[in-house]
Amino acid sequence: MAHLLSTSYTLKLSPSRNSSFVHLNQGLTKFSSFLTLKSSNFPSKRLVQPGQFPERSCIVCATTLSLNHEAKARPGAGSNEVHNDASKPKRVMVIGGDGYCGWATALHLSNKNYKVAIVDNLVRRLFDHQLGIDSLTPIASIHSRVRRWKSLTGKTIELYIGDICDFEFLAETFKSFEPDAVVHFGEQRSAPYSMIDRSRAVFTQQNNVIGTLNVLFAIKEFSKECHLVKLGTMGEYGTPNIDIEEGYITITHNGRTDTLPYPKQASSFYHLSKVHDSHNIAFTCKAWGIRATDLNQGVVYGLRTDETEMHEELHNRFDYDGIFGTALNRFCVQAAVGHPLTVYGKGGQTRGYLDIRDTVQCVELAIANPAQPGEFRVFNQFTEQFSVRELAALVTRAGEKLGLKVETASVPNPRVEAEEHYYNAKHTKLVELGLNPHLLSDSLLDSLLNFAIEYKDRVDKKQIMPNVSWRKIGVKPRTIVA
Ligand SMILES: NC(=O)c1ccc[n+]([C@@H]2O[C@H](COP(=O)([O-])OP(=O)(O)OC[C@H]3O[C@@H](n4cnc5c(N)ncnc54)[C@H](O)[C@@H]3O)[C@@H](O)[C@H]2O)c1
Image (cartoon, rainbow, N blue to C red):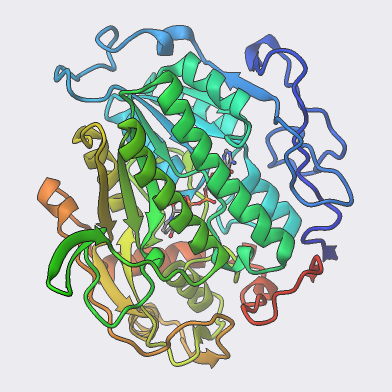
């Protein structure tokens, strides 16, 4: 079956007519539908129109799901509240809360008695439909997820379905939820996706840069005190031949000294969108006094957190394909199904990595210790660094212990990147705030491998090899045959 990458599925964001908000429990979901995706997993009718790629004529009609109105009550009332410290943010908006990092974080913060609202336009699920890929783990619809959470814990997560590139929608969510902190995960986050063709490159930069700009304007306009916690990436720095500092470097040049933003050398249109975001955030901190923390995150691995473990409807997504799968997760699935581990080129590419349990911990630490007004704070969010070759060796050893025959293949590198290089990135600031890292251990690898083995019947081996080339990107919309 052929799955079209772009030309026949367009996310056409429809203009809302009147109000941006419709309560689901009023039984009305205002998505006009040019084409309804036929997947039982897909949570609601979507706007996709033949012939174009995602464009924003205006708005994804917003849906809010308020399971009860308790969430509007200010902190202090109700059994969920334990925060007595007035300086602690109480109401946290998690943008991108239906995604891999965002879902785990939303549950974690809710469990820690923050009042949480998820804002998401579910576009990540649409990418799966477009590309013919799927999470290794079956994932419930976002509505089922938050209902299950409520039924298990009694805690409400508010839900705002819509596109943050639509300022009208975003403004309404800010006015309705009144966040003390916004955690912004809501971006197109795959470097290969951004390198498929011109339309994906443009979409990635529009989606990410405009979305973040809108968040900055919404904070300025409606929640001046709100702390922005923005997910950046270690990939913004590239791989310089000197140590990577946390955001800033002090340079002496021609006898004068200054502390300046650390140089950025992004290596995909996705990573470049993150660099643009960082500059926009830094500027608005200076110009408008916004308080912001940029979390330059490493590659995240793992699946389970205390909260996602509580019920299968809370399980997180697990991507293993050549476009969205990240290195270690991908290797575990490859080992489980007997596919050689795909090391790109020489495999000396070294990056920072962290367990998803540390992603949620870091975000919690950042919001519990907010930046000052006007401060643009940068934390490097990872716990260990590995080369791709080292990861492959670790997975091979763990797989063999479980009786798997694991082979490694060097495949031509689809990316333009150094395959052997110096890499030493600082990452002390989150530890100073109290991060207690979960380092990559044999037991974690065992559990990831066992998990991949459990779901191996769901693996589509055709999705494993990389099929997006940095050098071959062109202007023509590309169709990938599955
Ligand atoms: N996963 C990693 O290894 C990793 C590493 C470094 C940085 N990050 C960053 O962390 C963030 C989250 O990554 P992830 O792996 O959870 O990604 P993801 O794709 O699983 O989740 C992103 C979520 O944001 C939503 N979204 C995207 N654009 C939106 C928009 N315009 N309006 C509303 N919602 C929108 C998507 O539907 C999705 O649910 C991203 O910003 C990513 O760049 C991730």
